[in-house]
Image 1 (cartoon, rainbow, N blue to C red):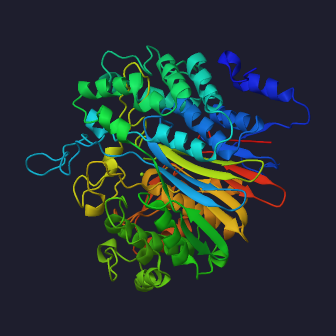
Image 2: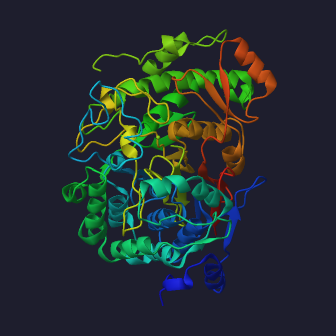
Image 3: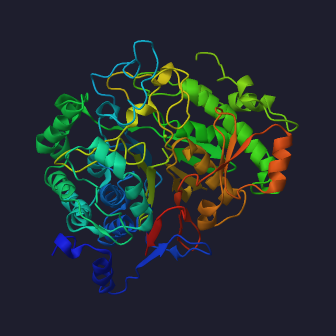
Length: 570
């Protein structure tokens, strides 16, 4: 019997079903401080409890890490509408148990009718919100194609089995958390304004913790994807519904755009840090190159002696980030359209040279730091999940709609949200996007082009063996959050849960300030840095890191306490 059939899929039922199997120990641990539990047979860490259970269920059924990733991707599309999606895209970093690596780019693409100046008025000024909350804000979605392609290459269980948890969660509903209730309530006015005549996510009374969210139209869409695979989304009824939705708001996406979309396998970016191998995402993600640059920039300094979030540590990391984000603004974009100088950006002597102007006595003004030269010249509402299976295959995936709930426009009849990823292009060189990131011609809008991203799904090895699987949402803060989490483990001796829970700070070249979570920096540290010319701003939560650490005892999870993030292992 199919254990995922119909209303059987729920948190309690899964516990009962799996609990009836002999010799299996099931555990799902909510993110918390203290020593995290360790599991020997596999683990899922993601942003919503029901999605974590879906992934664990697949692992217990004999699925591998990629199978579980497919189940989690579609379950998050149901349970985490702020960022989980089938109307968006993402990146996957894969490492097999034998050490083979690969990355899958299923980032959205600009529609064929897109143009460089499409968000500018006659005077050449950006039209407010056009790249954010209109039908023209959406790139061609890649998530469904990406999951189909990942499963084709590495999956083990039948495709339909992997979608059944999501279908059941959508059709039968699930109990929402306090975080989701607050997000839904906060966006009620926008849902109503941007979706006239529709009732998706709208409720007469405020949403409450424990309310059941049922999404019948989304369940029907997922059922078609389950039955027909890629064609269930990019062709037929769902494709027609998407294009019809586009026409209601002068959107650009066509049936041809959908049919022509294909995800792409790319060679991983790799680097070294003090004996650890870093395996991460290549362009059009800027995250991989930036992460390797950051690690090399600080490698020669005694961070362990400086200490976690002490003034020297914060100053060094800030100056490294300042220079790396300056490079991001000029040199990074879609490699299918622009020759990204990967080798030059990753040359140790280039990175060392970029740090040559760093001085301990005072801050380096961002106005004096320009993108480097050499011969031959993402929203905080993304989501990430990390998975390792019993054999040791590992998957690190970051996926997004861009802003919270994307464009906030729901495809009528199909029940899924559209992304607003077109804002990640440089609408006008030198003008910041919604995350304050500045870009140039390398990331200009072109038909069929993938927009630049900060997403940084990453896997680390130590002595040729799996060491860490890590990633986070956070828009422009993604790169620095992953960077600091890695340092927390390697340099500051934190376990995985401590490393993801630790307070973070961020600098991105422009604007020229340090944003720091509440209590991330002591008054003493702030005073020292301020005296040196650093401007420090208080911030809410930075990132929501979900990670797995391989220890001698087994897999240790870190689920970010800033959200509903959960570990599930056995």
